[in-house]
Amino acid sequence: MPAAAPVPAVAPVPAVAPVPLPAAVPVPAAVPVPAAAPVPAAVPVPAAVPVPAAVPVPAAVPVPAAVPVPAGAPSSRRCRPVFR
Image 1 (spheres, rainbow, N blue to C red):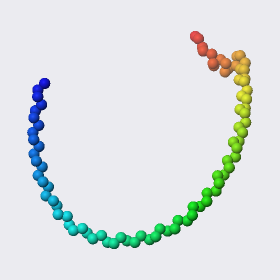
Image 2: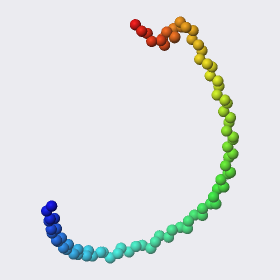
Image 3: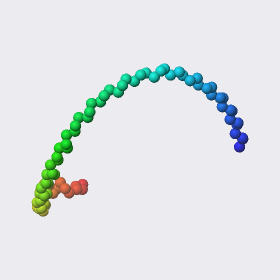
Image 4: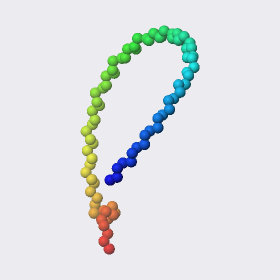
């Protein structure tokens, strides 16, 4: 593996001439802030409204057993595969 090429010396950075800052602009005296308006006492929050007990859900309505379709009805023919 060849030796790494020598890194050239970094050229010296010329000194930055100090920029003369203008005389500070006179800041006007702070504008008097009016006294904070008195905050009214916290409005009393009413006690939490009692939530009524959960309404009982009626038991599921029983679904009637599938009505048997009589043999030979048009609907029963449609469900059978037709082999030709």
